[in-house]
Image (cartoon, rainbow, N blue to C red):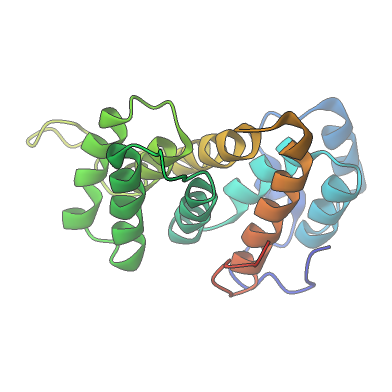
Length: 194
């Protein structure tokens, strides 16, 4: 399923990316053969271990690309009844992706809080916030995020987006979202027609 060149992912060894990620037993067993990043992702998808594939890809992608993936998945959940606060959360996260500076990063925290961390949109916003240099909610205290903190928010956004709605469509959504993430990892924009 994945393209052979994931140019946005610099680590070609799956085990190096997988360190510290909580996988299901079957996904852990696949690492024993020391697969490449591409092979491991292909195996996870082929075995329909979609949550593990999401976890892996979220950690493999750089901050900006991973946050963009979260935004695309969150946008997939929007309807004509979506509250304005969710739309704003996605828009602010996208603003950070387009221009990843502190001025676009800081407002994403308030947007995530406004959605009470209950939606894919809120986790896309917090992914942008956790991608910055300072995750302190106060102006004068600087707290740098851990290296892969953003990936946890991306996982939340993708999984919430995949599981929202009809239960019969969950696997279909996971596949779409993984295709989008792979497209991004391959240098594309992730905009894949359903």
